[in-house]
Length: 199
Image (cartoon, rainbow, N blue to C red; front, side, top):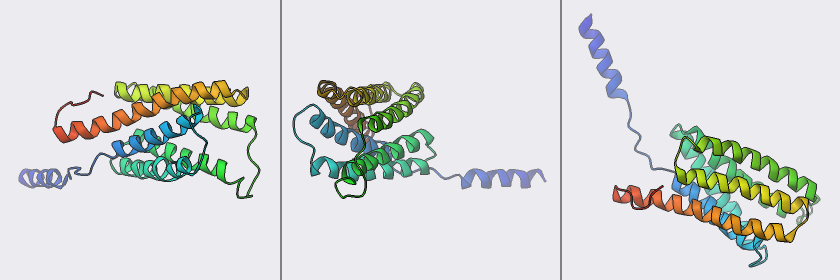
């Protein structure tokens, strides 16, 4: 009987599968970071909103992050799944907000509606920031600066202030580059098997 139990335990141990899949976080961080930088270059007044930002919002900021979230779900990472999937769908919803009125499907949102939209995303991001206190300093910076970005954008719409939106743009560029740095750091650190860029 004892031998059979040992054999059963051995079979259970041997059946455990090692996760050999790639880390999806760099994909999600790059999709978020690059799209955030480009949108906030517009917010800072560098260029007009156009198809380049909308395309990035659909494909890299949107779909790539959703894919990263699904891959993190496969790894059992609740935080990564929630963050990447949510922000991917944020980008898709933002593009829809901008494009649907142009297509005649609905009226554009007024400032009050956009303030509510941005505040909800700010609250979500603030709670996710609390989660990053169990994670790396780099992620803490990304989520803290993103919470501030949503607040600044909401204030810009609330007061209809181009100056506030420009300030938000410069802050958003910093937030986006911090995500780019973190994503690339994870890639390089994994490739080299050591800390090339600290996170």
